[in-house]
Image 1: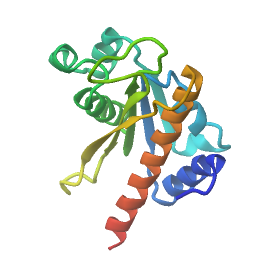
Image 2 (image 1 turned 180 degrees about the vertical axis):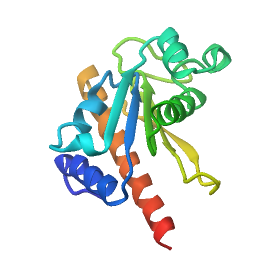
Image 3 (image 1 turned 30 degrees about the horizontal axis):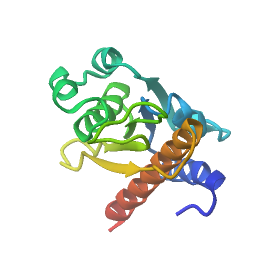
Image 4 (image 1 turned 120 degrees about the vertical axis):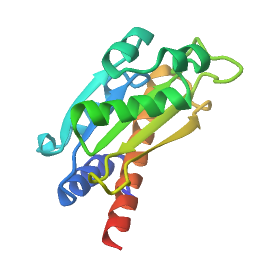
Amino acid sequence: MASTDADIEHAIGTALRETNTTVAVAESATGGLLGSLLTNVSGSSDYFDRGVITYSYGAKRELLGVAREHLDSHGAVSEPVAKQMARAIRDTSGTTWGVSTTGIAGPEGGSSESSVGTVYIGVAYAGPWGSNRSNATVERYEFTELDSRIERKEQFAKQALEDLYERIEIEREETDA
């Protein structure tokens, strides 16, 4: 695990370079912050392909092919939508990794199912063809102790970086084993 906030972007860059892999991001709750953090590293064009901000239902459907049924039955801030977003950005960009964020930064919004400060982070991996190792995971977090929208967005993006780094390291260990 990276030891400081600034280290995580560099650690991800190093890990992606060492594994000759790439990443793309599909953001809703973070509004471009995740892509910005990843591209703060000099030479990030070696591994960062693209980021899309899909803030509305329409953008999620049009740019990522998120199923209308998922949006209708689960809402945009949900595990199925985060998983579809991560898989879609991975597959449409042709990258090894896809990361998604969808949540409620507040201060308004929220519901009994998802309060302000809730975020779903999806990480999708594209294993080599024929390996049956492609997969996607989603984690739900609640950052309700933070006071501002900006703080919550920053925490969402930092958590997404941590989740990506953890998954890269897990995949590297499994590949090396």
